[in-house]
Image (cartoon, rainbow, N blue to C red):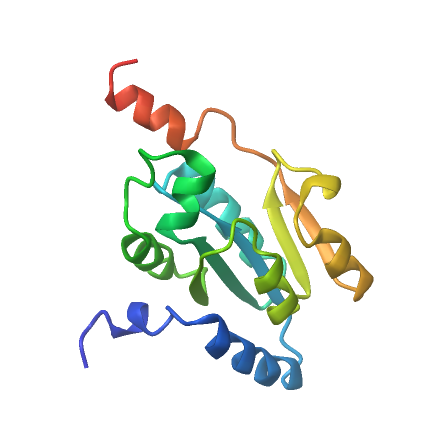
Length: 163
């Protein structure tokens, strides 16, 4: 067994996670879900993920696929591949599972996983969080983690470019 297998083993498919979700439910585990591009991992991402993990027992993170990021952010993105981004997120101790989704929104994933808590950053409101209404309708919670000012992938890219 490789020393990094513990990281690789956290990267799952949505189908695998849906099956695990059933097991977690029988064990009364509180599942937290968040998602994003996580293109260039920075302090704001790490703060969000650590605080999201505190909202339950298990943190599942959905990563936008490369194609999805291109549609959302433009042809120059992502900087890091989906596999690299998934590996980086999976390497964090506060994250229990990671998967890649190709849709523009995580609604299908949220419906499949039925998280107990849905978490997004402070640049969202309940009205703009995809899956918030569905999560609350099932009795789940939606948490908005305050945004850490001064951190964004776009600002990092501009800094590298000298802009």
